[in-house]
Image 1 (cartoon, rainbow, N blue to C red):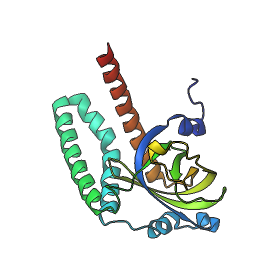
Image 2: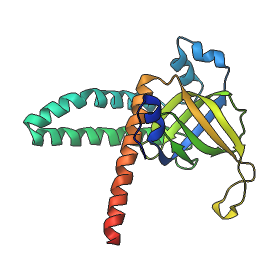
Image 3: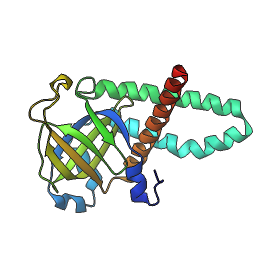
Image 4: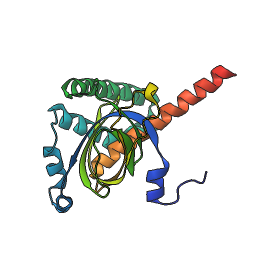
Length: 211
């Protein structure tokens, strides 16, 4: 497989399968032009107080990475200590957010995710080219992604596999992210990178067990 050569190729090339809690709301496309688009998007969903805290902590962590790399070049022990503190703070913030998110424990969808969009099964059909608002809670990190999306595909799922527990009225949706907030793009890219790293690690462990 050839590596991606453009930003669009890269967004579609790096895909992961994961579980997520999802909310979708159809909106008018004029809302994409709002100057306060992301603030408007935030008002469409029930977001807990810990949402902004978690986002700010993730932002601080990303901004501090360059300093952490500089510290690691001079003192590896100090860098490792700072990483452990950062991990503890992140775990606390995740736990707090998980406790405040409705449906986090039970309402999960299996999705195929990239930086360009996602594919999922959903009980509600949406017309193709419909603009929607999306709230995506990525499991298990409880990373919350808010974005406008365009419905690229809506196709009724063939209920051929009753053993998989598929409902009769389910639809395959493909959504394309539109005008995503830059900070949300960073959170999404970070989640996908972490998932790929974990998938590679599991693959290596399974291969080692088989040998």
